[in-house]
Image: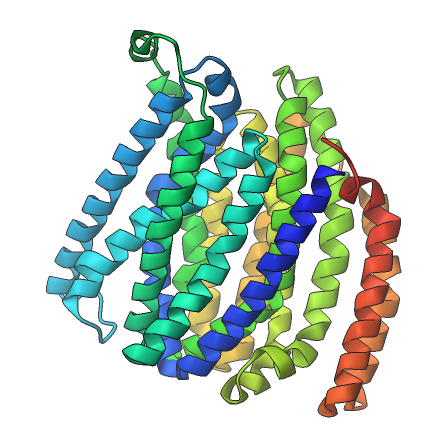
Length: 477
C-alpha cells in the first residue's frame, strides 16, 4: 500500500478535527475572549519561532545521518535541555514586560509567567517529535501522533470549559495539558526508535559543529521572527486600532480560509520532504536545482487549485463551521486562502535555501513582508478593520514570495513552472465559476443547496488534483 495512503488518512482525520476545533472555539468563546486567546497564542509563537524553530530545522536537516552514526540520541537530549532554557527565558521576559505594563491583555500574571512558557516548552516537543519520526520513516507513528494532537485538544477543551469557565485562559490551559501528554508519549516512542551506540562513550566523544548550527540558525531566527510579525504580530496592531473582538472575528475568518491550504500543504510536505532531502543529499548545485524543480512542479499543482477553491468557498464553509455569532465572517476567509497560497510559494523557495544551508536571504525579504503587513494593517484597518487587514496581509505575502523566488533563481538558476501554473488555474476555473455563481444567486442560504454546491465543487477539485498530481499522491517511498 502506498505510503501516501497513510498520510492521506491521517490528514483527513486531522482535517476533520481542525474543522471541529474551529466550530468549538467559536461556540465556547465570545469574540473578545477568542481575540484574547489568539493574542496569547501569538506571544507563545514568537518565542517558539524565533528561538526554537531554527534549531529544529537544522536537526531535521541532519537527523537521518546522525541516526545512522548513532549520535541522534545526544542531539535529542540537547534539544530538550535547550527548549527548557528557552521556556525559562520566556517566563523571565514576559514577567518583566508584564510588570512594566508593556503587555496589557486583561489577564492574570500567572498566564504570562507560567502558562505561556509551559506552552512553548510542551508544544515545541509535541510538534517536533512526530516530525522526526516521519523523517526516520516511522510513518504510522507519525500519523497517529500528529492526528492525536487536534483531537486531544478538542476533548480537553470541551471538558474544561464545561467544568471551569468559557474563557481564553481555560482553553489555553487545556492545550498545555494535552501538549504535555503528547510530548511525553511521542518522545518515549522516538527514543525507542533511535539507534543507540554499543558503547556510550562513542556518543559523548562525538562533536557537533556548533559554528555551522549558529551560522545556519541566526539568519533563520531573524527571518522567522519577522515572519511572526507578518503573520501574527498584526493581531496586536489590529487590537489597538479596532479592539479585541475584531481580532477574534478576523483571525477565525482568516483561519477558515487558510485551513484547507495549510492542511494539504502539510500533507504534501509529509509525503515529499523525505524525497526532497534524499535528492539534495549529493550536495551539488545540480542536485539542488533538479530537486527543487521537481518540488516546485508538484507544489504548484497542489497549492494553486486549493488556494483558489478555498478563496471562494468561505461563505459556504462558514455556514457549517462557525457558530452563529461568527457566520457573517465567511466572506473574509478569502484573505486567509490567498495569503496562504502565496506563503506556500514562499515555502517552496524556503526549501531551496535550506538545501544550500543559506538562510540569510530570508532576513531582508522577511523584513519587507513584516513592514508591509504592520504598516498596512495600521493604516487600512482604520478605514475598514476586516477588509483593510486582509488586503495588507495578502499583499505582504505576495511580495515576499516573489522576492524569495527571484533570489533563489539568481543563486541556483531555477525556473518557475509557469506551464503547470497555467494548467492548474485552467482546471480550477469551473470550480470557481460554480462557487461564485452559487453565491451570486444566494444558493448558500438553503442548507441543501449549500451542501450540493460544496460537494459538486469538491468533486471538481479532486478531479483537478487527479489530473495534475496523481503520481504524487500515489507514489511509494
